[in-house]
Image (cartoon, rainbow, N blue to C red; front, side, top):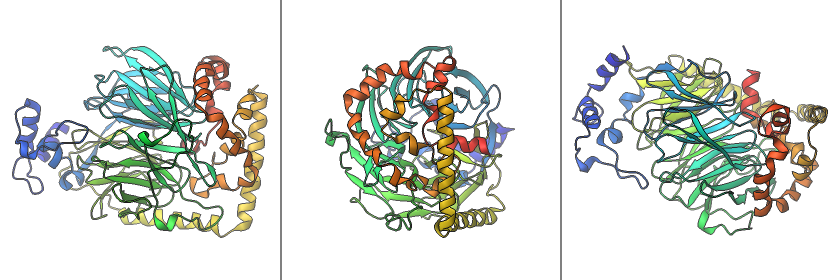
Length: 542
């Protein structure tokens, strides 16, 4: 049935192209020569075919996206927090709260390999390394660990190694598109590590700081046109671009090359509400930077413009409140913007016109967090609170835009306005929440002491523990990390402990502190008790 529907769609003439899509697919599969005038040369990848350039970003295909697979069989038993297509496009890797990474034959809808990882807390990201024939993966998790895993051609795990460890949750990994050895990691400790898998220890590049103190990081992305340049974002309103060539060793707080933020978000409107970026990504050519703000909109910046330049595009209709939402481009030329939403829908906007081009139901439990375009075909993978990743492909005979799209977007807007008024206009409510947070924090710390937790971690972190549980049950937009700023002055003391020697020593000696994930020592010593558990605790609360 799927094959018949695809044949129907593929045989149609597409927007402004006088060649049948089916003919293009045949050329691609047979490896026959295409007209070189139509080949797109990426700065970091080989030229793409006419099919990839003109068809994958077709409005005709976007409007006909339809659910074709729910990846359930022998799959996950927890929220799926990460999805990543292999560079060949044949496999999909998914990471979950169940501490497993599953490699899917997504076209057949079956799990090819299920990896039992050495993580002791929710997996935040799992990615294939380029140039490794889909056999090498790296992963990051709430326990702060960055792991390197190698599979045999049969699918069994033959090698595992921890290659870095953050002092708080490690959220994202950034890969160089042409290197199987080099990657960057970021975490809620504010640190960025440069990891060379050929070396024994990672290198600490920087610790992100603002005038308010350390900035927990949620996202990192390497410029596709220049591997020396990378962008980071986290618990404040600025996207920062750094150049590795300008970072001086032992300078733990270098100045970014550029900073971007919408003008109206640069200054918080009150003491308790502060926008922050949950995810950022570069476009295919590195010229544009896309940022998704919590309980705000999605903004597109021209990365070639000067620092502090205003956003050039704005995309509305979704809601990014309950979890740490991802955002991405769709189409080989980054023609569309795709995001999840608290309402359980997947939103796709035309990049240039800002018009909503597609809206699909992507999660039946209510929240879509992750969006992953296929590297060569107009296929989209999504995941969220449901325990199964989902695959969408353009197989529908007619456009599939959600019929109640107006009601969905209006409900998202109304919910955002109500929450904002509740936080910004009610001083008594802020006082009650402050008292609740303090009481919860104290109760949580007493529980840790009963479990025999090693208090040395809290001392080493210079008081960071006190501030890390603030967002545990509550939406990101409340900005609770700022309510107790007057109690967290000792956070400044952390900078001295983030020199390279200490970071590297931590990576060597952590096994004694956290365990290997086996038995009670691994659980109580793991980093799972620390970090803002925004995405994953909210999953369990739904």
